[in-house]
Image (cartoon, rainbow, N blue to C red; front, side):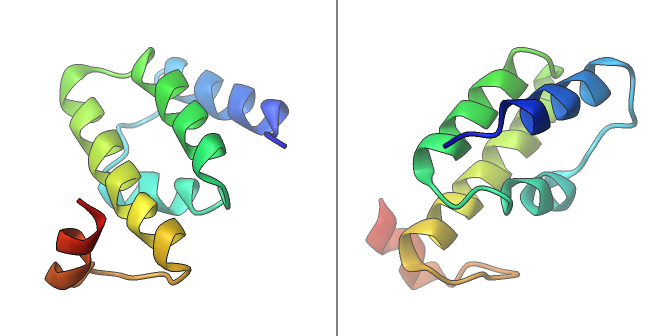
Length: 87
């Protein structure tokens, strides 16, 4: 199940003018998600509130987490052969 209270508080902190997060910061937040559905929900909610340049960091971190969820492992840098398998 999703954790709406975590998502709401996170979205509020982003909306309230918190400093811009980079890909690594978003990835760390996305690592709370263990299911693809939860990740998709969080990304959709975030994309409604962030700027265009920050949206790129959100999507890059979400793609990175997608690979991690599908392989069941965490990576600092995704090996190229995994990107080919996921696409």
